Length: 295
Image (cartoon, one colour):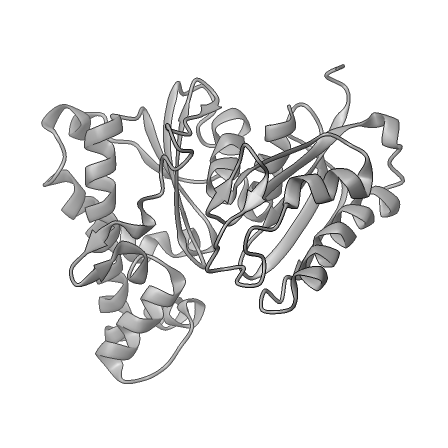
């Protein structure tokens, strides 16, 4: 395949689907599209929205099928990457064991490449974004859920059963780490502290405005994130740690407690070289990373 061909990337999350066309150098071609996934709808409707997003990228950007190298799908998991299946996914409750890759291949007649959304996003960041030039990248995505990816020499480390990086389910206090390190987790922390309900975005706005309970919720969030990162950094010893996802926009609120907790719990030499940065590719990181699967 020629490098001048383009790829279509699709970021399939628990809240939205976002799609766009990407060149070999990581640049976005034309318009991109984002729609709600409405994940509790029947699987036929959910898949229809995924297919519609891809169709809009092709038709509204006047792309020729012969110029498209393939379609990359970055999907919330867990997945069976080898078989191209969505498994029993909490964020896509009606899509259990859905053959996503073969369905997209049948719909468009193009090669389709698939991985979980955290892996895809961080592959894009490792190649074209904040991790460019780094040989080992540990990435976490903070949004609807808590994702983690390990990128070694610009390749996703999948593990023996394709579950490397699935630390969201790891134990934390009386539950699992994702119950705190996620958008829902921040909301729960704030409600516990203040007695009031608010979304993670609202809690961030309140904290930036000086609300004491909101600030404390983000401090607790940072400590919990550091707990997960400490184990991961000690295990992987990455050159760089990248934090992405919608909640990365609140990094000024949780980074101080994250950093302070982290340096106390990782080996001394990594502390001296600790580099934690925000993802660079912004809201497009998910579909850009999905396109990287094709290249």
